[in-house]
Length: 473
Image (cartoon, rainbow, N blue to C red; front, top):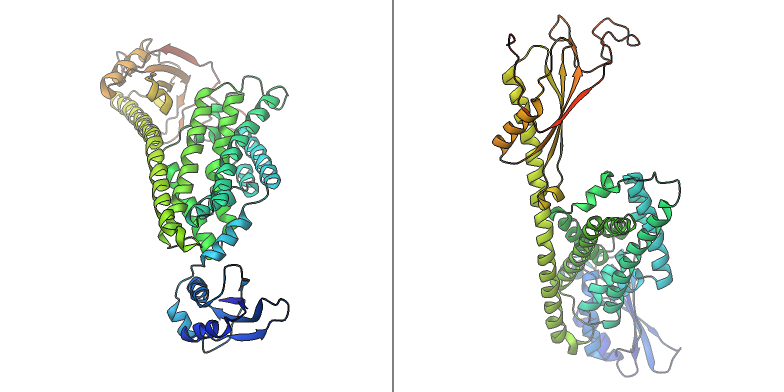
């Protein structure tokens, strides 16, 4: 419930009270002696979704725009007379006046906004370099991006151009500052002993996750924008929603900055694309939800113009997201192809080993180095195969090439194969295996392995087909 207090201008008392009576609203009237232009103050409880309608009726009855109207949240209202009002005004949607006030409160002062955003970026960049998801989440709690994201949409819907433009400017300049901050931090850290020389940040999982953005990233941003709009309309969960919005924006911005610092344009571009797509999606989803919720400008004369303005804004954002989504779709397809290739390669090699059925020989591991960017650039996949063989069995010298031929034929893709061999022993009990060097059979003390640790011979060639030498099955 809300408690509404309205100062009634001179000469409007009777019409205002009649309007409240017609709407079936219980009220209390107090004489106003503070200022001569108002003759009384009236206060009454009303459900949140009814505040906007009641205030519009009071404006028609004589309450001017320059009058004081205060809307207060109430903890509890005990009355049997409110059931009719609750039935008349169901739902939890707040009034446009309350929405405007909340949006203003969420957008902090510039100094506060940039201070928290820079600190958040520093923490997020550190978390990326440490591959620490917990640190990155901690950075999101600090990031103040929910306010500008929501206020930009609220300002557009309510025809408050100052609020809308400030929200857009804070988002754009804030994320640009985040990228610059991460780049500067990356340059500084490279001059210290905190980062090993020659480190490849693309190999860090938290960084790699944001350098291959796919269509699923778009759902995160759309969901964050919708959650932001709902939270401000319902007045709940704004802190957690702010974290969700920050997750969609700050880590990719920090990734883009680190890409610039480490001289990796592909990383910088991928992170920047993800930032832009998420930023547009958050604003689009929030704008659409506010529009569908029926919010209109405070000034009735501007409502028609705002509808056209909001429609054009939605169209521009939608087209921009659609264009950039082509990049996400390409990465998504490339990720699917690389994952499928890895799965097919492992299955094909395992099949070859199973069909060969050479006693004592087994496939230890298959590692495929093939990333979405390799697929998009046409680079060949690299397959690393580790084979365990008995000491008395000589490894085929052309195994890598045979694997290469079989994989190229079976998967219709040129590959580069490396095959490594490690000596292994098999106990009399087929259930007990020592497939890698240093593993002892059952009953042998762990500090005295029965299988000697021998050198690993590696064939650097193209992939192979495992076959049984003469005299063996």
